[in-house]
Image (cartoon, rainbow over all chains, first blue to last red; front, side, top):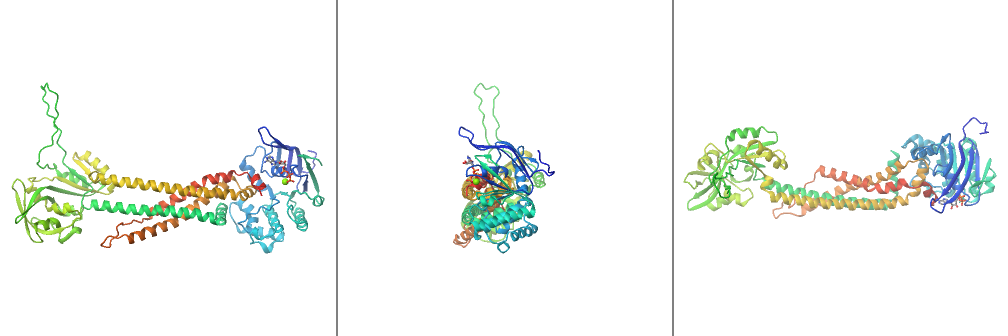
Length: 231
Length: 406
Ligand SMILES: Nc1ncnc2c1ncn2[C@@H]1O[C@H](COP(=O)(O)OP(=O)(O)OP(=O)(O)O)[C@@H](O)[C@H]1O
Ligand SMILES: [Mg+2]
């Protein structure tokens, strides 16, 4: 590595390939992706539909393994790790924000934000409540803590999802089109929130977006075309 | 609260209709089982109680001195083995006092009573009836058969002159308390007794034949001086009677017959009743299990998105598995508690409505804590087991697919 920083990178991908299907028809989705994310970076991942952005994000999020190549997360080589280890690493290192919020409908906003902490500690504690309330306040939902997701607007749900992604204080947050189904004003606000959090906490962000206007506001842009990084 | 419990409870609460149907199935299943079990247990217990009301748990008799082969050594004919029982004469247990003491010393034995019994005639005026003499030691005998509780008139107080007879014999002879009856045996011995008590043991044949006198009188009448014809024994666990009887027979050299052998037909009846009851219960449990499993499978599919999110947030497969197993277990436990209540109500209502003409219940139902605990335990385990397939399915869900399918 020519990198001179002392800190280990949050994430390091080396020649990652992904193909689907084994018998006969195989689809090659990613062709040798190498990529390093440093702590505090706010990176946009752009590219045409079908170029493999979501697939790459899922691989980085340890939700599916690459077919080939290595993925080092916070210094851990993940290729040799087992299901349990990956799950633990995922819980500790990664926060997800999906396009469709994906909150758990039977839990309130507050409980949804507490969920990563409850999963980590195995039980509910008052301290988690305090932290979750603080985070909801941070994303501007102080008055909506006890609402179930069904009673929140799309933008509000996405804010809850962001607060949840932050709850366990992970070094890396992956967002797959977090503003995809919001109107321009709401999208702007969400994006602004992500950016502010990045500035405040130094959390690394990797955000997939279709919106070049938003991408331009990021400190780094990675473009993916047909499973290859082009810039 | 542990996160597994919290999630399981919320999922159950969220799927209200599904949870209701699962619970309904368990409530009905457990209700039926409780109803059936308490009814059958009550029924069987009262039958056994009635049967043992006039019997000892086991009876020891002198060994059969049969099987004396008569073989002529020089016979050229085919060997003919004549197996004959000895004649009519009553046989006595040798050293019965000694045997009784030995029996009494055993921990599994609760009561021992000597009996001299044999045929005789009861004569009063012109009436003559064939009876069975029951020569007893009153104190010992009443510990085995509660005669005092069967008395219709007078008292069960047996002495040299006082005897007790059954209601039917009293009617046949036209005898009442204080009347004298002459007991006479086939070889001419006789003795006169006074009727001190009249009993009804609930079995007509016994009411007609039993005449209770002292050991000594019976020994005199039946020419069995110093001996007894059998020893009655009760044991702590009446269902072990057969086992114990075999052991006692081997050790004393006497023959022993348990109530289970005496009432073999009854035992066959009870056993097949149990078997069919178990079969019914098994299929009830099976159908409840299928009900839970099929509802939970649907619920897993509906919850696949939530499961995917949880997995993405660092929830292990094992934890997902536990969440769904817990749902099955909770449904089983809660359902069984209600089911116990429903079953108990049902059977109590049934017992109250099905009455004999005299107002006593036809079916003496038995509601025991043990049965409820077993029912709850079985239902909980059933719930967990039937949740196994859905839970495994949930744990195997691919989070990527679950998240992609919006
Ligand atoms: N499980 C799978 N099996 C087979 N092919 C798959 C699978 N998942 C994704 N693909 C294929 O991989 C390619 C990339 O998909 P991906 O979802 O990563 O694209 P994307 O860049 O996120 O597109 P979009 O911008 O529309 O979300 C697509 O051609 C898709 O059909
Ligand atoms: Mg995508």
